[in-house]
Image 1 (cartoon, rainbow, N blue to C red):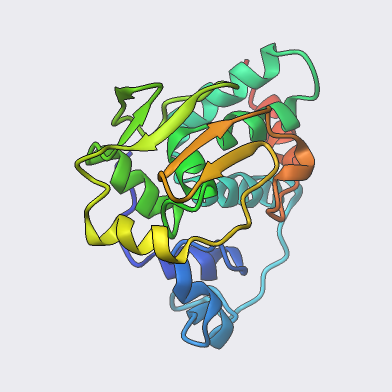
Image 2 (cartoon, rainbow, N blue to C red; image 1 turned 30 degrees about the horizontal axis):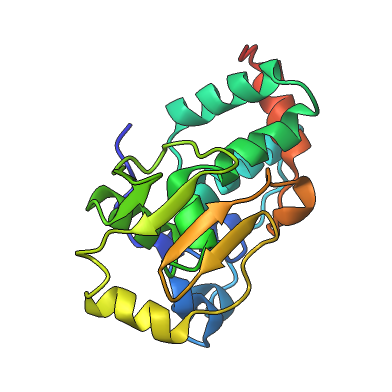
Length: 211
């Protein structure tokens, strides 16, 4: 399955809530979700009661869209989470949070996860001094991420230096002046500030025998 390339605001409307896929636009009156609170398409305004399976599926799709993850990697992450010690749903969210593109976004080095993914692919970041251009690269505690020296002079990163917002989660440490950050702890469930019911995803994959 190819990555979705259509208007991302349609994804938010489909889930019935903001997924914050457009960066600053999501916080303005121009956000389509605020103006049209129904799903897109010809039958978008007709309300249908979801079955238990439908509710679980919608939650899984919502999380995939939050983090920009396709189905195959999502299943792989679930298997990893299921085999790890602890609560499977929380393990799954921890894995998603530790993706390189999400860490870039959480550090405030990109306006959205989609932008972070694009910046990573274009090779603007190093991890522990080595160039990494794979958005799905999983970070570890102690890893240091930094914008490449050649990229620091670009207008994009100059703007980030000047306007960086100090709302970095506690498991990350950021140096806005140096455009770098470090993972100082594993993310906990309390660090995930998204309206996610991860137990529904676990129920869905368990029902489908994803092991």
